[in-house]
Length: 270
Figure 1 (tube, helix red, strand yellow):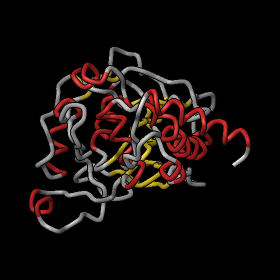
Figure 2: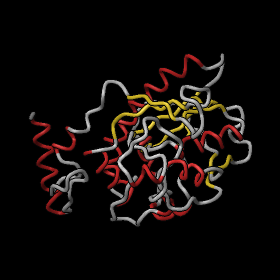
Figure 3: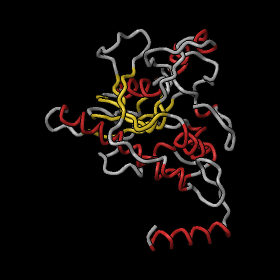
Figure 4: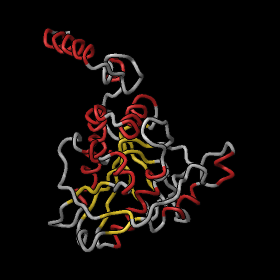
């Protein structure tokens, strides 16, 4: 460690005496994010890629939505993101945002050469429900994107028209039905725009697919999505949900509605 690093560590030690804190990743005392957890947040050289498919749609069809993601939803990134979303630990936004930036950069590299002449790609963050925003006071995805590095202009224009019910006990097909029609475009704000959707965690992809539907109904063209993390463990039906079967594809289903999640400080399943 160089002299600058030793000075920073000494300052952090002094601050920890005045304002005790635990690591958002592992709970170690005296650091917002400890050295071991910081080392586990090294950005990959390239983002992973997956195709999100709505229920009943053929694989590799025209309805597929390409998703770029930086990490799997596990380990240190999962714990720090959970702390950010459920315990207002915004000190995790910067390192997680840098990871998200890898997915955004790879998505831009793949999409921009395919845009029509003169078109401009814009990012569109998946909206928070009104109740989730009231509870937190911020949109976690916006907090991450702020640290994601160079990116296109941001578009706005999606909102929840109704709050989906809690989805913890639902299979993916039932989740898709639960989310269907829950998002709408605001007026004509998205008409003619070319969009890259942004989310934090993707499970079955239903939120992104529902946002694509709403954006396209509002006149936009959606070219893909980028997310911090993705988990491939997707249950398609209740029998699979409560059994030991895992779907081999990512079907549109959806993670639990944020507004129905437990309040700050309690562990939840994304």
